Amino acid sequence: MLVLSRKENETIVIDTNIRVTILRCGNGRVRIGIQAPDEVSIKRSELIERELEPTDFPPIMAVGTDLLSHSADCLGTVPSGAGHA
View 1 (tube, helix red, strand yellow):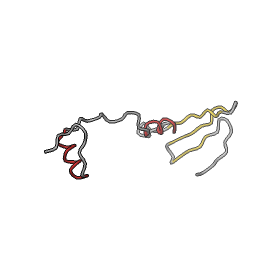
View 2 (spheres, rainbow, N blue to C red; view 1 turned 30 degrees about the vertical axis):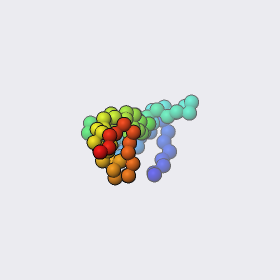
View 3 (tube, helix red, strand yellow; view 1 turned 90 degrees about the vertical axis):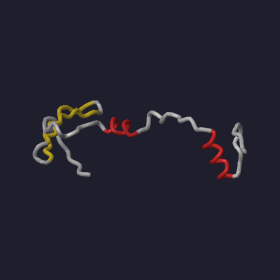
View 4 (cartoon, one colour; view 1 turned 180 degrees about the vertical axis):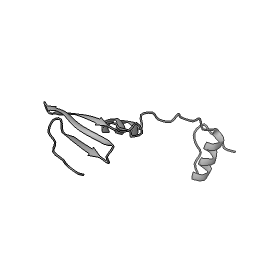
């Protein structure tokens, strides 16, 4: 990680087409402005982390008795409620 110090109204240029300007510092916060081409995606890290967290579980699928019986045969057990011939 490259670490730079900048004062208010100073700019950092990345790859000639992205400009990061320090707009304001104070109260434990830094306000920055970012100029970049439209094709460059800019997101706060907490939003990316939230997108990566599974929020919805996949729907529960009904399992047929035949599949349960077959699984039980493989394990050598009989599931409750499954008829076994």
